[in-house]
Length: 226
Image 1 (cartoon, rainbow, N blue to C red):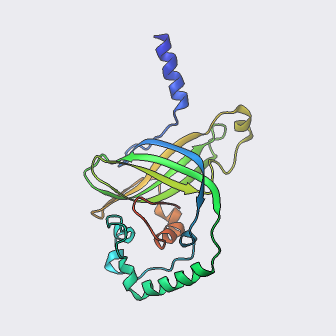
Image 2: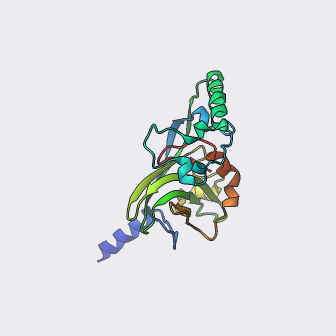
Image 3: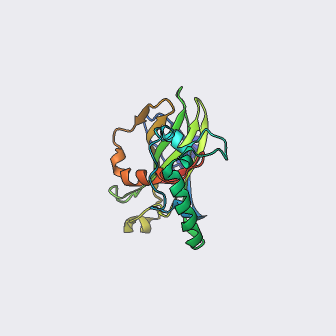
């Protein structure tokens, strides 16, 4: 009995905590690691012009075209804005230097959809709590274009230049105590147009970065940092 109690105590110290009560999605796994990525020109802020509000853009999933097969023609290409953007992109790419790989951090989570609706977009964040100073909390937020049916699971990855913490308390460094990690599901959007959002979170806090990433190109299952 003592051995079992000791084993349970050790496991509780090793496993990061994740508390998102009332979340429409269940986070079953999460971790982070150092990574190196090559950022394409189209992903750089300000390169992509705003798109015309055609019917295909009125819904986030349609904008991301997550349910269309790879290689399907983008309906925005047939608009005046689309043709102009294609020309500008061609010129910009010919003049821009080849991007170099950059060092950053990869945040990974696995979520399960316990509800009956199909999920099309997920706003989530990876948090790091400094055990020596509760006021020091680092947040890494992401938006993912997905297609998760009822009862299905999906692994998501978000790349960021920012690591686990912007500011580290000296006490934490001296003690060797690791940061406490937490994943929060801030908002979930469904294919029927409905959504569920965490009460303590507001889209306005990431509005500028949200507007930026919506102007960029998307691929099925892609996540972008906010």
